[in-house]
Image (cartoon, rainbow over all chains, first blue to last red; front, side, top):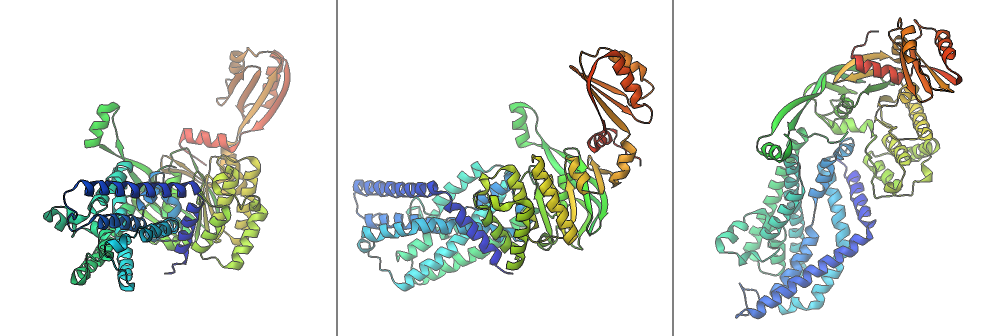
Length: 270
Length: 334
């Protein structure tokens, strides 16, 4: 199978985003606001706390964690829910199905195109903030080629997990014929379970242990903790192993769910 | 080329009762109702044939096209296009077909038109020479170059449809499915589209299935028509035969200097013709009658005796009216 046609989808979506300049400016502002808000919140929490270290995190650890989570959120961000909702709800999927392409791969590359564009815009400023803030030094994170390499590997798997989880979610669109509620639900659930709001080890042990088995922790949390040196050695090896197992399991699940959906599809409108 | 045997498509519809109570009830216990969009149809189409597929709204035309293109799976029956079962091998089928759904577009809404074409070139893996040659051809008949650099969302409907037709032909498909391709187009755009389709058919023996509500499209392009009603094919055959059988009606329109008030007398005078009908619209008088039972001179003489005629015109029944009467009668005997 040649991937050439799919790069055309990648490119098309990249270009689509390029056509919306205002959107890019809005991304900048929402991201800047989110980061500023998290920084202020955690600074206030630490200031009002009687101890300097919460669950093994100093203030600068926490600030770095929040920055890295924002960065990894952007890196792993995929929105098949939007794509599939658009396609199903008004029957646009018909236009994809008349083409000699695999719909699942096509959707993946479209989302990857959007992701690439977003990161082209946001990545450098975010890396800049992280470097300039000096938080890497104050939380004793030493970057090496190996740790960066593992981070990249883990982020790529995180992106795949995020994509497949959302793809499976999206297929619920078939059964509920409603997307807005679903979209909100998945956004909150994934953010909370993935450690986007607080680090997972802030949860009680029982919950934290369960969360470590679920796929959500492997989207951003594991790569970020690996980069910060909080997961290392054999713990890191097993984390990466579980991560790769989840990639496989979810890819298979997504495929099966899709096969089921396509058989039961109605094409709305005309 | 296309073989369809005993194909049906059922849809399950959930009926919701009226009001808030009904919505709540429907949420927990929706009433299922099976609805046959296509009901046991069979036909076959040869290579290079151009077939008009017509029927009232909701007759099942689009559902048939969606099954032929592999988008929907038939509930019963078998479809083969070029030896391929479309739903089982959708991708292989997709390589050899071109599709236009009039109310949708396969172009990228936010991209300049030429970007959509270069994406399609990649998808269908069209070689550079073929691509250049076909784009030149499309530009010649469809005038694409005027707007090839504009984003698709800024195109007028006519421009967008011309672009969509070109998009469906970029890989020189063996079968072309056009589902209401001239919907909302002006006369010159329609002519350009028909010309492009005809040329493709002549040059490459492209097989065509066309659904439309515009009978001019059918008359211009198709020699064979299939009429669908409530999911069943009620006529499959020559267009000319249908016209011969049902085209016996003539229409006379008069513009009168004063109001025509003798409608009842007129009806009575021609009561021997069961197809006779009169319509008065202010100063205009429209009379329809069967040309085998009533003569033109009889009608004009009667009218001119009673009213001052400013202008008059006569027309044979167009295919549209024929089809409307077939839909109503639901039977076709040719």
